[in-house]
Image (tube, rainbow, N blue to C red):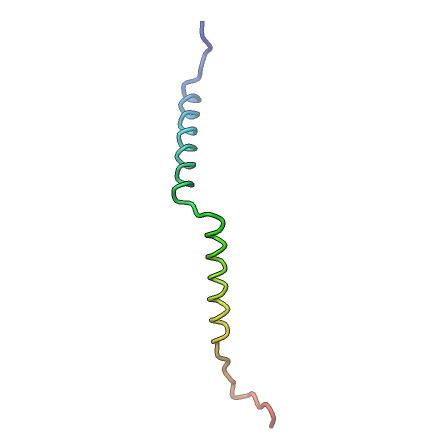
Amino acid sequence: MGDVVNLNQFRKQKDRKGADAKARHNRARFGRSKAAKNAEDQQRSKKDSELDHKKLTLKHEGDDEGN
């Protein structure tokens, strides 16, 4: 005779395998490469740096720098 198998465990295991396969497929299809992530990070930091250089500083009325 064959082994006794819990059908709920079998069903859940089958579902997990299917979900893992689908996740692997989606990572390959929609994921970004490390080079693309690094390029985006560099571009973002360059834009942030440029924006910081354009930032204006406001003088407050109470600041007297020389008087």
